[in-house]
Image (cartoon, rainbow, N blue to C red; front, side, top):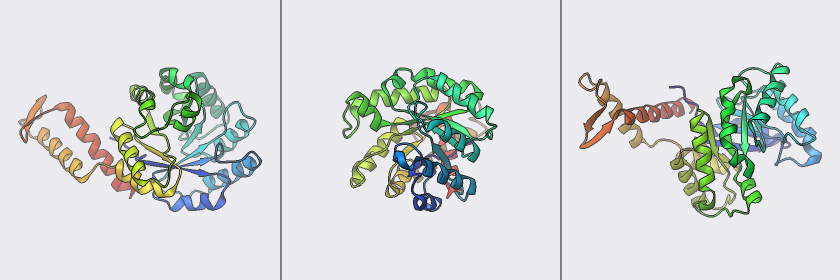
Length: 292
């Protein structure tokens, strides 16, 4: 089972050369080198050049590198996409995606530019229309030419566009978050939770990480390096979970159990689907260990 850890994915402003250099040393699983929200209009060209140079230079180790370009309807988008295509990061992140047609268009442009096939496309989900159209967007993953591989939730923009308040537990947003989760899993793509704004509230951040983990997110997007450690911890299987998972796998591997759909283990009924869940838990733990 091939798993890529995406517990912690940190936004880094493309206009800050020192931040781009520091990114190579941070223990995040992924980095979003940002040309959009974190960059002022008069710094867009500088950010584009610096990010492209940084990605081409490499040195990010096992970290997954995204370039977030400016939106399709902006004056910077075409140049951003061309620069990102030439730099060939792991993925290009497209803001404010609202339909599969936009992803199809991006896929055609990347093909026309001869972009390396390994460069994938991810979509920011941050508008009411995107939520209402989420199944259509996720279904773009069926078309290999779109390169579509994952969602990133833009919870701040969702709050702005809807008037929903971001409160502890995020009750107003839970239906939207879980709808995105279901669509992602239905089409076999990854999904990352949105950012937590109060960088001084360590306990609030930890709780939101745990909530995102329990919802099924692959990881969380971050706005400060101090959030990486707690996020990695929250989205990593515990030693106890891994030990139990290995025990379930071993039990089903016993000759007398290999053809059974359910067995009794430590006084409780364990079904074959629990063995499948256990295999994923172990695969995630092994991938994290290999990443360290």
